[in-house]
Structures are given as structure tokens and as C-alpha cells.
Image (cartoon, rainbow, N blue to C red; front, side):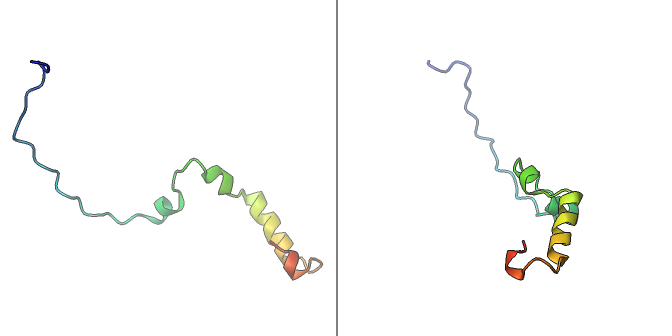
Length: 64
């Protein structure tokens, strides 16, 4: 007998599907992915982007 520790059973039942829970806003924002640190901007970066967008001396085509 090749599998001495294996005992087949017929009482297996699939799990019932769980209802989907609605996510809170904080869970949707933070995906927890390992690339989030690349795309997430610090408050200083956001302030700098706001300053550049609001600067009248920079042409519209050159603004981020």
C-alpha cells in the first residue's frame, strides 16, 4: 500500500459562499499593496503640486 497514512473520506462538504461586505472608505483608499509607497504623495509633495498648479508664471501646458 503506497499511502499508509492516507484515509479517504466521503464526508467532505464545500463551504457556503459568504455575503460580500461593503468596505469602509479607509479600506478602499489603502489597498495595502507593496507599490503604494511609490504612488502615495507626502503632504509636502501635494503642497508643492498645488503651488505649481496655482502659479500664474508657469504656462498651462507645462503644469502637472
